[in-house]
Length: 139
Picture 1 (cartoon, rainbow, N blue to C red):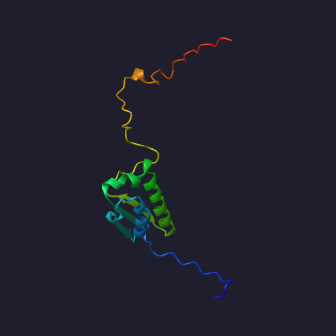
Picture 2: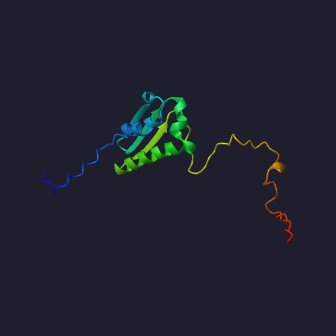
């Protein structure tokens, strides 16, 4: 092979190493990386891939991230690799929160209970009532 020749791209493996990829992406978030268990099932007929992960409960907050951003990023990378291989992938976290619909947060905000009386809310006024007049400044 001469210096001007470029090496040919390697063909994509029939099935990418989904377990290795997920372990590589999840381990940095774990206090004890040895607790990570990854199971991968590939359905040959339907070209579906199911990757299950399990780890210590106290690591879930870091793996999921604020608003689920970390786990969603990991799912996106996994789905992109599967798409290149002509497959569809799904990541499941054992004991994790169920997947939510995009943009909808079904949890109630625990920091602000809704047991306040309506009159104390700044938005208690009816949306159809006219706005209160502002006092004029004297010149």
